[in-house]
Image (cartoon, rainbow, N blue to C red; front, side, top):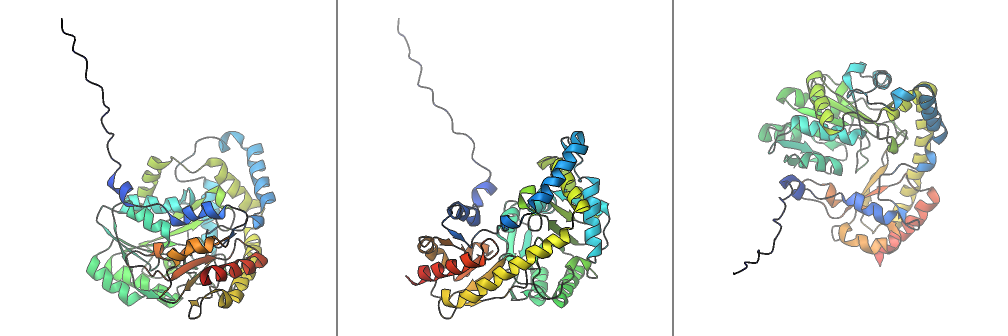
Length: 403
């Protein structure tokens, strides 16, 4: 009798990742954070608020009160739209700042980054065109790119997107939306003037365009006068989504953001959020609402802004000695970031490893571009370090760029 040995079993390969997951890379900023976690490294890279300025006492008191008075509610599931107290408080803060808002206009999100993902899900089909700033907030490029959207950069200058170039692109490309951070932009720190905001709103009204106006930094103003939101300009009322966040004014670990949007789009984002995470953590929402009721957030933000302004000044004071001759940089009126351009012969991505050996880090500018990048640019965050460490960090940066 002949015994036939069974063939060796071999496992079939698992199916591949989705094409969108294969085509979108990780964030260079998040990768650099692994380097800056070492205490000896002076961190100009990550956009991290200064932890010593967190109102730990006030936030702890808010959580304590909520857990003592509303434990069953705070630890339970909640509605997708968000806790009524928090939505009402956010609507009131928005209205006081010049944009009449009801609680029902607000959807609470798990950080404003989630708002970008929800909007991408609700608005974009593969192949749709999204207009972005040049350069643009990196995580927005990721959020829109994951949908298979086509990203087109709008030419601009130190005041943001050029309205004439925007109109030309809208006519030619027929985009779904324009994404902009008009106040203290990430990565450049620039602010779009009021007249240009009005012009952008007019382009959107004439040609049928959604505007996603991201405003995580707007309250961190050191000098100058507040500029009204694009959403507050005539023609933008029914087509602008305004995003906000507590990450830069309260604490990023809370993961609390929100979007204010027209009803139809807001409902679509709510459905998308139900599929993503059901709702933003209840206890965090109730604690934030309690904080707003019991504490003066505006006074806290004013204190933080004063410190950040001093740190911006410390960085500006040392840049001329740190950067090569022929470099240029801006003077942001608020926010967290400063943008610099070195002479054309410099490639800041190629130079980063050498600079990190001096125990200082920045973010190269190239990843912030949709399309052709400018390799000579870099982003510097000035809020995480003290003025003394900023001075030392700039000396290290100068050595790294020279050696």
